[in-house]
Image (cartoon, each protein chain N blue to C red):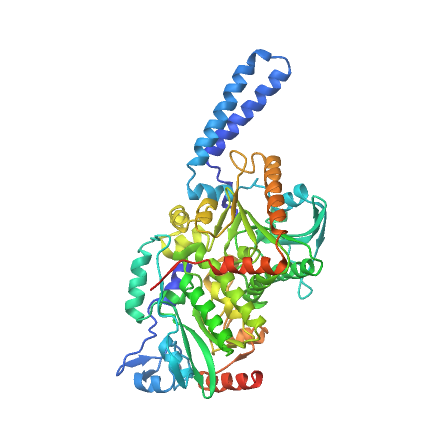
Length: 278
Length: 321
Ligand SMILES: [Zn+2]
C-alpha cells in the first residue's frame, strides 16, 4: 500500500537531529556536508540551498534572540485515552518519541523576543510522532493563544506535521475545531497571528490553525496540503504535476503570502511585526 | 467508495423475516384470519432477532450500516423533515459543489438554514455529487449560507454524511485546507444556534467542516472518525484487510463518541437500522431536532457562543502534572 510507504518516507529514515562531527548527505543534491557547517548555516545545504528539517529546539534558538521561557507549558503530557493498540501500543510509541526527542509532545510553546519585540512562539517538532496533532498539541496551541492575548503580543507558529494523531482518533479530529476557535479569539483581540509552514504541513494541522494565519509564510520546497500525495495519486490514478503541493506551487496558486528562505525568516517576521503592531 | 454492497447477515435474516411478515399480512387481509397467531409469532421473532443482533453489532458492522446503500441521505431528511426547501448554489468564487447541499427551508413553520453532504443515490448522481466528497467550493458555499443565516438570524441545521474531503489535484490547488479551516472558524463564532447531525458517515475534516455546533447529534448506526478504518488499517496495521480491527480501535460508533464527550446525543434508529423504516427515522430525528432547537433558543446569543466554544475547548484528554 502506497500510503504506508508515504508515511514511512516522512517518518522513517530521514534524520532531523544532526550530531556533531559527522558527514551528512544532502537530500536534494546528494553532496556531503560537514555537520558543523550545516548547523552554522541554519541547516541549509551550502551547495544547493536545500532546507533540512529542524528540531523544535533548533528552531526556537534560530528565531528568538532572547528566550524568556523555552517551554511555557511543561506540565502538559499526553495519555492514552483510548488504550490504542495497532502494531504497537500508543503508550510505547509515546515513550519512544519522548526518548528520541527529549520533548513531552510534538509542540513547544516558547516566550521570548525577536530583537526588541516580545512574542509567543509555537514550534512543532516532526520527530515526535510525525508532528501529529493530539490532545496536547491542541491544548498547547490554545494556551499559547491565550498567553498572547493576555500579554498583547504576537503569536507566531511554525508547523511541521503529518496530520492527525490517529492513536487519539476522534479526540485528535476535535483539536482542529478547538484550535480554529482559538484563532477566532486571537482575531477578536486583534492579536497578530503568523504561521510559518515548514516541511511537511499536512492533514488536520494544515486544515486548521496552519491556514488561519493573518499572514502565511512557507519555507522553500516544503510539502504543504491536506491529502497526502500518494493518497491523491491512488484516488485519481494519475501522476501528480511536478512540484505539486510544494511551497512555491502554493504561492503561485494564491494559497500563501510568501516563500521565505530560512536565512531571511527572522528579519521578515520582525518587519511584519513592526508593520502591524504599535 | 462503492464497497457498501456487502450485506451483513443480520440484514439478510431480517429482510427475509420482514418479507414473510408482509406476505402473511396480505394473506390475512384476504381473509385467512386463522393465521394471525403465526404473524404475531413472526413479528416477535423479528423483534427479538433485531434486538439481539443490534445489541451485539461490531464496530465494523456499524460501518457497513452507516454506509448502507439504502440508508436515508441528506436529501431524504430535507424532503421529509423540512418544507419549501430552496437550494442555493455556488461559492461565488469558482463553482458549485454538488457534494454539499445548502439553502433555506421551514422547520415546523420556522425559517431555518439547512446544509448537508449528499452522496447521491444512483450511479450517475453519485458521480455528479462525487460520492459526497466535497471540494473547497462546497465548504465555501456552506460558509456563505451560514453567514446568510447569521445575517437573518436563522438557526442552522447541518447533516453530516461523507467519506471525507476529496483527495484531488483541484481540491488542493484551490485550497481545501484553507476552506475547511475557515469553516471551523466561522462555525465556532456564528451568532445563531447550530445543530449538526451525523446521519451516516462522518469522515474526517470533510465531516468536521459542518460539525462545529452547539449540539452534535448522531444517529445510532452512524460513524464519526478522524480517518476511515481502511485508511487507518493501511497506515497503522498490516494492511487494509485489518479495517475491522482498526474500526474497533478507533472508537467510531455513536455510543463511543458519546462516552468521549465528543457528541451530545445519540438518536435511536428504528430496529434494524434507519434504512428498514425510513419514515419512522424521519419522525425520530425530527423530534430530536425540535427538542434541541427549543432548548438552544432559550440562550442569549453571547451565552450560546460561549457555551459552544467552551464545549470544544474542553475536548481532548491529557495529563497535567
Ligand atoms: Zn544540497
